[in-house]
Image 1 (cartoon, rainbow, N blue to C red):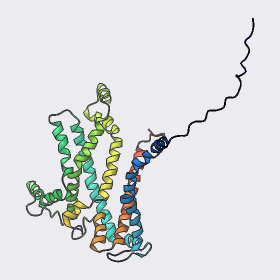
Image 2: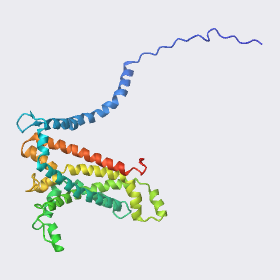
Image 3: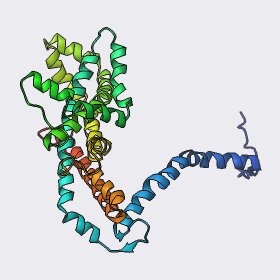
Length: 324
């Protein structure tokens, strides 16, 4: 039996076949594949640079200058910040911003949570109720503030008429201290409660119904289901609304401006940081000081957001220190 002999061609190293050079069309196609994602996101970043980052940096630059309307900027270093932190009106505006923010944000989110819980049940005309929730948000700030200014009017206002029904004297809502802040907080609460309720409702509908059925089999009632299923499931949504509402409260401007003017009342009893900044820039013509107020307000918002995030992470930790 003869054994096959190896072919003389086997074992030789074959020369690689050179690839044909790509055509111009293939080169353009490859370049399009690499550059197209950058081209799609470029408009957003260009607009952000033009209307977001540049005004932020320019405002910071202006805050280090003495810049009056109609004049050239003059470098003054930290003088504007020294003036701001030694100005009692700044602390008054900061205090009024905090009190009005608390008076409006806490009731607003609690009411929104309750309304969302009710709208999550099967009920007649549920769609109509859900649509009506967004109507206050769709109403302009000017229209709603003017209506509420009539409601909180000293003579003939609806609020004082309701107080008279329970035997209480009428209030001068606009010229009082706490009463004016409560009136502005009511306006803010009325506008934003429905908006937050719809956000909560969307979060509730993402919670699995299996959890409710399991707790129902264990004998939990509606309130216990709300405490032990709904609220834990809504925790990220609640954190989002708290952060957004805190930012909105810090930037409060339109409601107090239309309710009583840029001074925030005769004694600045409801002058917020937004009104204080507007007063410095366009009332007194000092753009440098207005820019300083704007930057301090921005840093305050950043600090509040960080505190909210830290509290949420601390709440999510178990006793052993591990994240849930």
